[in-house]
Image (cartoon, rainbow, N blue to C red; front, side, top):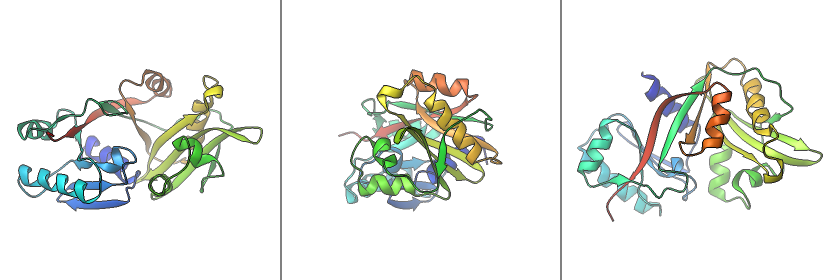
Length: 238
């Protein structure tokens, strides 16, 4: 299996939607609208039916679950050409950015004060989502093969969180959030280092980040991450 296919599979397994349906090698996913990754069809491999038929199923699946039809597609893959031919287009209005990069690297060994728990401690989920936690958010964030919830505290308050999930010996990292008043103090780095230690022995680490998120990209580059590939979300014509 190619590196792109491996990392796409790891990232998908690490971020479990509420509903998954396979269409050949495609994955149709729904989670009440919480994140594009959990509410899109992952177009990788062969759907086992003609492209027009497969995309029709993507649309009907989305309608069945009350979400907008999305296709997550690797940039430069054959599916981008096929989608364009079927009248689909890149969703330039996606709230997290039109294009994301998949980054990976060996695990690091930096110092950390972060604690990693097997269950989210009080306040972890609320900081991760920025408020009250929905059933879909709880499902996505707490599901997965082996999940670790990293946190950094100042006194009794959690000021930073990050989620790690180990899939097939890869550490997948997501939801790196730091309270506004505590940013630019190295807390995000401590969270990443904490997850590295928690997943010691994994073959590497992987994460997804919007290509216009310059601050996050700079942080990950300092941590030794390098880009594998990019993906975009496509939507059908209105």
